[in-house]
Length: 125
Image 1 (spheres, helix red, strand yellow):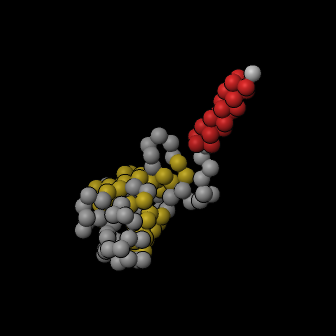
Image 2: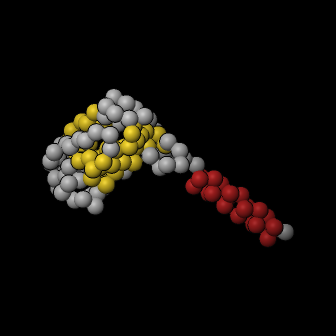
Image 3: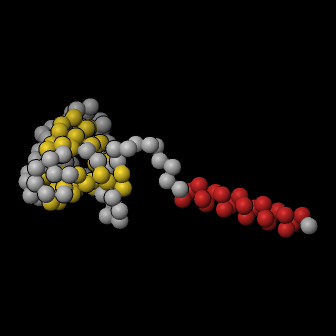
């Protein structure tokens, strides 16, 4: 009789653990929301950290300003490489921020002109 009880208890524990792992508890950051299967995040800020743009794919509305903040230990840029308009934050030293206003709809591709393997996209509608 103990074995069936143990199996039942183990099943309940595993079910609860799986449910906890699959829920999106999140940190309550309301400025970043999932925008579906594209992986893009609706936000107006991008952090540069660990030699990467975080998030690397975002969505924004026409006229929004995107703030790029360098939270890394070295200088970076956010420079458009394609899209309906161009932008360039210039060199951003550690702790610096720069706003870029998106005034045309479309998909903007950008990179760090110093570390060109660092890339990102902004979808503007």
